[in-house]
Length: 199
Image (cartoon, rainbow, N blue to C red):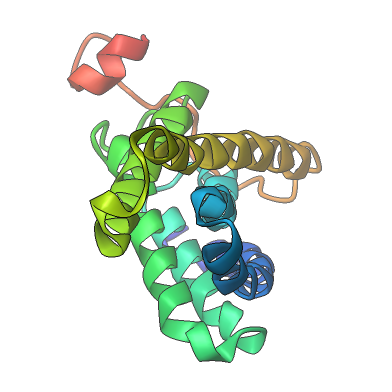
């Protein structure tokens, strides 16, 4: 089996298309929330984490979050064509951020706490990025704290839900044969600091 086998690509595509439909629907809520209750904007960002987490948790292979996020962004154009590049950009950015913690272990360590770490880091990066775009003085200090907190809590919640969905898919055996192991590190050798902390 090659890394990018047809079955692996089709699995990522199926997850990505499903996620993309949700991206497109939520895309219509963005301007509404920004105009009415902008402090809650961070609550919407979590949906963009869903396809990447499902793919990573189910397949445990490098690159699947980035691939799935990109496909989801492209699929969103069917529902929300006016914001295609926003969906693609966010899908690619979040997919890349989701890859980073796993890349530190050479894609050999896939425990649950790393998914949580990825969600927190990516949420903080996205929250800070959007806050810079709207202007740091846009919110009062307390409101700013709530704003950033939602950028962290929403991805964490969606990551937890996505892992439950992945567990359900995994229990059917649908991904058997294309999955990596949860822990592929050689004992006592080659473990990165990130992986060693979890051992």
